[in-house]
Image 1 (spheres, rainbow, N blue to C red):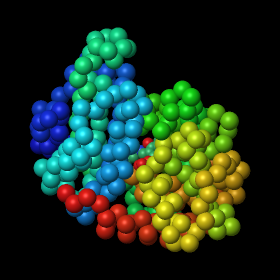
Image 2: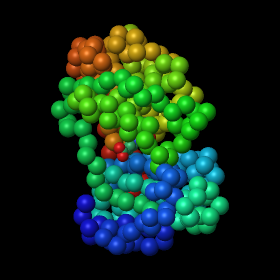
Image 3: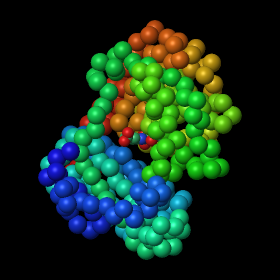
Length: 292
Ligand code: PXG
């Protein structure tokens, strides 16, 4: 990354080269913290309020008090983009428990550490939005919501990383993760949708998934466009026999899935509903959002 890039760190804007984190920060020692991944398109930050809201809600769930207001966090994101002349890119907003001693307890961490990076992200190549991607089902099950609720966008992503490694091993782009009871949950950094007989299905949040902002945006866009969208549990059988399947996420947008565990999905290329939804999504991301 460009070492001259400007990063927000607890009240200061510094060059990346000078933005150091202590080895005693509990974000590093224990994954104790939460984050957001946000996109900017065309000089605007997409769904900034929703991301900031989820940032505070994740922090509340882990009893971490962010020493800032919602509006202050919004301004940090916008200002970090501005200082990097960023019009299109990826923003990483993070709060860690801060520096502490070598024990687990956060009581020794008086100062949460907030930082924000505005940069770029490697995306799926454009042709994959036509050909679709290949996914496998991971052996690794998604964290159970009674252990660490996947609604918390925490700094501990090992559950997802282990599933991603399984996909990498076999040359697949993503991995479907199942809940403990075997129903489909989500992918490692994306929510999942299937389409059968013109109806759109996505697993409910109580299955133990991240309450994705792209997921919600796409459910709303699809409903407005006249599709029926159900939040309903389904199994791999339903994925294999779907007419279409796509994944949603801030990074992936709405990416078609055309092969799952060696089964071809639908026609084997991006289906008409997926293409329509991607078109609607690309329109809304480039025409709405908070100006930088
Ligand atoms: N599930 C999980 C587990 C995620 O991490 C999503 C679903 C989609 O959520 P949103 O709110 O983005 O629609 C995510 C999002 C990265 C990266 O660094 C990861 C995400 C988003 C952006 C970038 O790889 N995860």
